Length: 319
Image 1: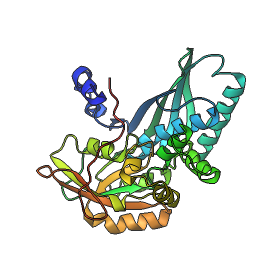
Image 2: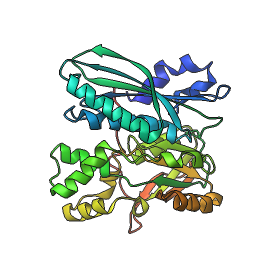
Image 3: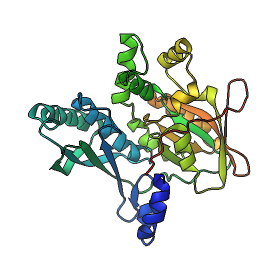
Image 4: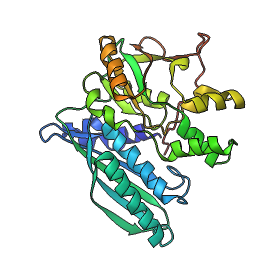
């Protein structure tokens, strides 16, 4: 049973009387009356990060991935709560000092403030982050429209490549290794785009589980499909060179998530404002596809115009 089946079967009925829960089918809780937006994420060692050898980087990664849930909704994050379970080794004085320093740096960088949390002793290392923001409106996950353009910010695939290098599944030169490993630990979340998204996006999600998996989440309650152009999906120059030299398949690299870029749809009439926003903010925003009728089959088209077989749609949480 995957996570959405689990939620639907056991928990959706518990939220029916509360519209702010958005049927448990979005990234956030949104109370319109109080303009309150909340998201929560849990991170476990071995699942969301390999180990805790670099606590100063792990903590930055989980903070950024957490507040990206608000950013993709067009909401500026303001506060966060952090809870952690660990033992004397993982929560040593040295590690706690590194965690505290990193949190201070992230607070300054993103204008957020720690408001509370909890700590417990456990031999299993885990963190939970609750992110809070305020907004009169948000961009919902399932509001894509027929014929919408599909866009993504930044580049995809660098983080997953960094993970493969850390797992020693991919050997590269030190300079390139440092680049990809940094992208794994420090995703480039697009906080400066936040307030602009509300001007043009019909639907949105952050890419955590993979571009295909997350795009399908965006249309999972609608009679819609999609067409993506593999060639248009943006990747870094370093990844372009690596794919060529190692003869890797682009679609396999970019489909594994952990990018925390914003995936959104917009009416074609918004192309000019999106282009201007990208230029003015210095943020890469790329049109990568189209939303189609649900009578059509979703597909990814290669550079040669052929339909690609999607073997890996991304990360699926199975229980």
